[in-house]
Each structure stands twice: as structure tokens, then as C-alpha cells.
Image (cartoon, rainbow, N blue to C red):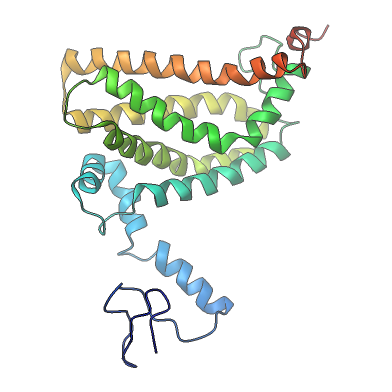
Length: 259
């Protein structure tokens, strides 16, 4: 018998491949062993996902710096962690699309949230939510590169740091988002502002633990970081309505409040 992953010959009493470490699967897949594999992979006590999730709250610098320095088994890698976050956020976007008629997006009371233009932009945003979320990672890396100059981390290492951070924020807000969308979708628009504030606070917390700066030096650099990222955030958000207007799919009048 050979390993199905690397083709290395195996002894009959092996449970794991001595070459690649893969678990030896001898039986056909059933619902029972599929469920066991899922729970074993993500929810057992010693699992890397649970350890990664917990430590990104308590000691994010250990998780991030550990991966950067070569510790690749103790914690879930940033790509896999981001993949879980995108999967969960996709479900949240699905619920948002279903409840879009009930959600009050006019959080500032301007009367422009329910216009034809805003609704069209929301539809496009739902379709490309995953892409927009991923784009925040290099945007934060750029902001961090400018605000926290120095050679401690290169640009790719900063991408890793913010990949972990944004993925963790998304996973952490998954359950509250689902509960709001299922039970009280009308307030989800206002709650989303709180979620954004939580993201800013958590990112600031991670940067503080990584940079180890304190006092005025930390506050000043974080203000620069927030300004640069927010400018990029709104600039990217503005690309969608500009594109729709440029292509003739919408007109400026479509964004005016209904009389």
C-alpha cells in the first residue's frame, strides 16, 4: 500500500505516513467519518484552529511573529485562516442579501441610503465582498509601512500580520452578525458601524503588541496609520459608483433622495 498523498510505500500497521505525515485513510468516506474528520480538524482541544483563534486574542504577536520566524505547525497558517474567514463572511453576505429589504442602511438619517444608486452599489458590493475584503490587507500593509517605518518587518511580513488580523476580526464577528441578521436585521446597518470600530480597535491592539511602542509615539503613528488606511478605504469604496456612472449604468440623479 502506498500513501495517497506522496506515493511512499507504507507498512500495514501505519496510521500516518512517515514521509509526509498524512493520515492513512483505508475506508470509503461516510457521513460519520466525514463528520469526525471535520470535528477532529477544527474543534478538538489540541487543534491549531482553536489555538490560533484564542491566541490571536491574548497574544497575537506570538502567533504572527511565530509564523514569520518559521513556526508553522503550532498555529494555523494565515492563508488557511483567511480561507475560513472568507467562507464565513460569504454566509453573512448571503444573509445580508436575503434581508436587504429589512436592513436600514440610512444610519445617518440622510435619506440617501435607499436610492436607486445606493441599492445598485450595494448589489455590486455584495457580489465582490470577498475581493474587497482581501484588498484591505495590502491597504493596511501600505499604511503600516508608512506609519511604522523601520526594517523590523518587510512588506510581505506585514501582509501576513494583517492577513491574520483581518481574518480574526471577521471570524470573531461572525456569530454576532448572523444573530443580528436573523433576529433583528433592521439594526444591522447601525451595528455595522460598531463592527468597523471594533476592527479599528483590534488592528490597533495587534500593532501595539507587534511594535511594542508606548505613549505618544504609538498614538501618533496609529493616527497616521488610521488616516492612510481610511483614505484608501473610502477611495476604494468610491470606485464602484464611479465605475457605474462612467459605464452609464447609473446617473448622478439616481443618488438623490426620493421626493
